[in-house]
Image (cartoon, rainbow, N blue to C red; front, side):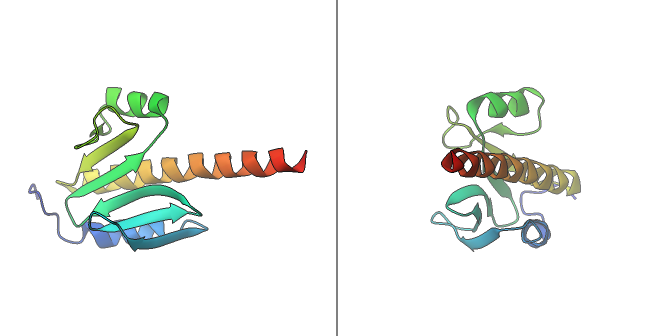
Length: 118
């Protein structure tokens, strides 16, 4: 299946995301569903065709260089990446990158908490 509206992609991604501890999902201001850990956005899904995920620039550049995602479709100079969902591999790649964004957010949260202890 190779089109720009991969039926069921959003639900498959949603099911994966809600299994991550502490993740909440809400409507995204530009449509679709956003996923957050606390106040930090992990990424958002625009229906069955597009996923946008934030990363630090260094990580974003590595992801783009490896061809795992494209620069963000509207903000190409930002740390955000976009993944167009054309087949099952794109869904799996999107889930993998959302998990990476989640893990980075967890690391930052833990770092902030440990800094408060001192």
